[in-house]
Image 1 (cartoon, helix red, strand yellow):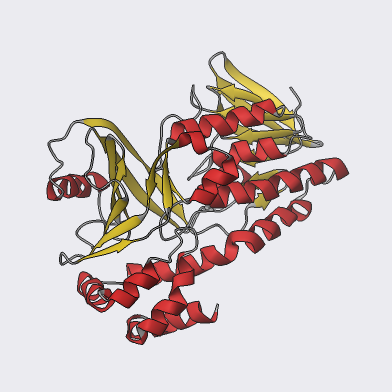
Image 2: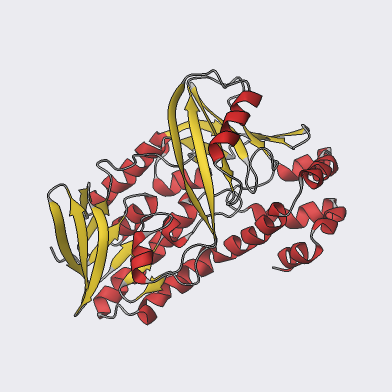
Length: 388
C-alpha cells in the first residue's frame, strides 16, 4: 500500500483526522484487535463534545453538580440546574468515530503495531507488525495519534510531554444514590498532585484518581479511597490504568510527521481530559494534511501551519491550565483546607456553579474578585493568570 496518509491510533483524535481528511487515501493503524479497548478514560465530557461527535447514543448519564471534598473533610456542594457534563460509554464513542472515518473512505487496520519508519524519497517507509508478521507501508505523511509516550513522537525525535500523571480507575457494580453529582477529592494523602473522583454511571460507578511522579503507585491510594467511601467490598467489573500527559512538547511537527491528541499532550492540565482538545486539534491537522499533500510539501516548515493552528485554537487555555496546575501542585493540605474555608460561602458557590470543565481558567477573575485574599497563595502566578 502507498496511502497518502497513515494515522497511528484509532482513538478520537486519530479517527477525527482520518474522517476530516476524506480527500486523502488514508489508512488508520490500531494496535489493539478492537477499537476502543482497553478503555483508559473516565468518560466525563462536556455536552459540547457529544455534540461535536454527534454521539448522543453513547451518553449513559448526565451530571448537573459537584461535591468537592477537602483534605480535612469539608465538603462544598455545588448544584446547578443545567447539564455540566455527560458520562459516555468510551468504547462505543471510539467505535462510532472510527466507523465514521471508514464510512468516509479510510481503511482501518486493527491488530497492527507501529514499529518505526525510515525516510525514503518522497516520504516514509512505515513498518508495522501484525498477525502475519512485519509489513511496510509507504506514505508521504504520518500522523501519530498513539497516546502518551507516543512511539511515533519518539521515532520522529519530537520531545516528550512535560509531566506524566499515573491514573487508575475501577468500575463497581453499584448504583450511587445521587446520580447527578460527581464527587471530587483533594489532598496529598488522597491523590498527590492530582485529584480523585467518584462518578455515578447509572447502575455502575467509576472511582479513580491520578498521582504525580514521585508519589508511588496509584493502586494504594485507590484502595484507601474505596475504603473511605465504603465501597471496598463492592464487586469490581473493570479495572483500568494509564498515563496522562501534561504539558505539550515544544514541537508537534517534524518532516512528514504530525502529532495529535495525547501524543501531543493536547490535554487539559487540571483534569487530564483530552477528547475535546484532541478532536479540535485533529480537525486542524486534517486541513493541513490535505493542503500539504496537495502542494507536495511535507516539510516541517509546511506542516508548521498545524502547530500554529492548534496552539491558536486551544493553546491559550492549556497555558493557563498549566499556571493553575503549578499553583495547585504547590498547595499543602493545610493550604487547601484554608481555601476550602474561604470558599464555603453562598456567593462563591454560585460562581463555581458557572464553571466549565473545558475552560476552568475562566473562573479565575470572578473568584479573585470575590476572594481577593486568594492572591496570597501565589501572587506572581495568579497575577500572570489574570493578565493572560
